[in-house]
Image 1 (cartoon, rainbow, N blue to C red):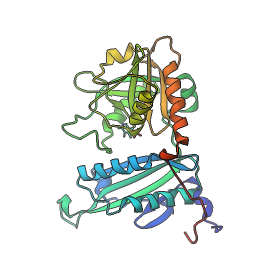
Image 2 (image 1 turned 180 degrees about the vertical axis):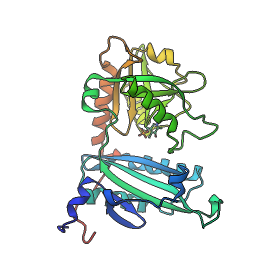
Image 3 (image 1 turned 60 degrees about the vertical axis):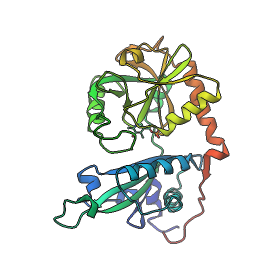
Length: 308
Ligand SMILES: *Cc1c(COP(=O)(O)O)cnc(C)c1O
């Protein structure tokens, strides 16, 4: 693939209505309800060292999300895998953030009936996205616990990945304006729930604690729970108040965008002595070690593609 356009894929590659296009050229129609109404679902799987991590788990969650929102991407798991691999292969990226999406699509002109919309499947691969930059990973994140409440589960099911991010974005803006690195939202009873694209954990007396409701059940959260169990640690899955989170011995966030990311300050005050916790370090290290387990990896074939 040596044509003049070949280099364009290096910034990322998207799959749009049956064709692979350089990420900068990927677009959707302005009347797609995925855009106009945030009527869409998605999932993000990562590629690390040339292989997908836990692809089957992400495909299963994407399928559940589509069913929950009554969206039909019209593609099998095998086809999705082929498309995602196709995006990564064309980009040549060995570490990549890979997103699969299903939007409601467009209804016939004049119709307001979502059942008449033609659902659309899209995908793209871009360079790996870190929720915390290098400096933040080295010193630990400074979080703000927002007074913005996460959209209630009775309104929008948080266990289905969605683009109802206005609450997360307003909370994040408030946190950034106040000098913090990121934000955690609460529910109506002042329990911490989640932040923009990540779950939260704290450690108290050697036990791991993570919220049980009001948030997406992150696959990284699940991986952390499995790692903790493999290390013989106790994990409590239960409501966590903001006060309890502030008073913890260690804290971290979990996301496909970087795995286990340490938190060392909350609302301007240090967590314990303000240094990254020992358990947090151990979980982070094991998270990356698990990327070498063959059962967790699906390797990508980077052979050049003929044509495009
Ligand atoms: C994607 C996401 C997470 C983290 O999920 P992972 O599967 O671990 O990447 C947490 N909260 C929200 C709102 C998300 O969108």
